[in-house]
Image 1 (cartoon, rainbow, N blue to C red):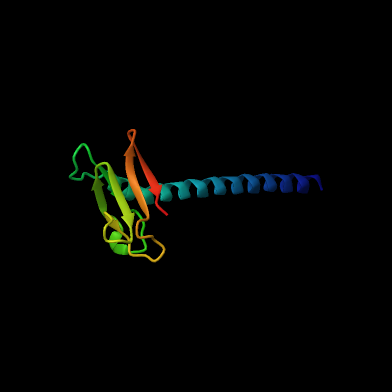
Image 2: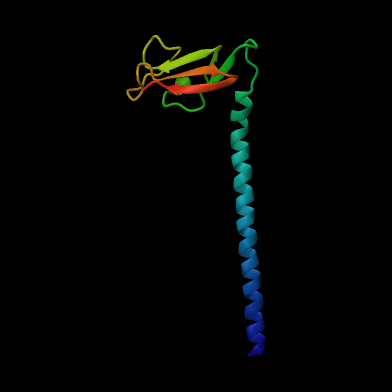
Length: 116
């Protein structure tokens, strides 16, 4: 009877540590996959572009319109975003206002302003 209790206790400990090892291995693999998937996006953001020292670059990472993904927009002090043709970046979507937002340089920081 005592031998059976020792065997059951040992089996319980092995299974507990086995589950812990499996969970740690799963988290490790998931972190590696996420890092590998994000690497091309990060490298693309910092890829060389033909801009001057006084310009910044706005890169589209995700968009409903697949033709916008990966496009880069260089600008100096400000850039306007919206559905109207007068904007620097035109987004053809019913949820976007004609003058939706503006990105401006303010005290060495780029600030996005919602224009309603």
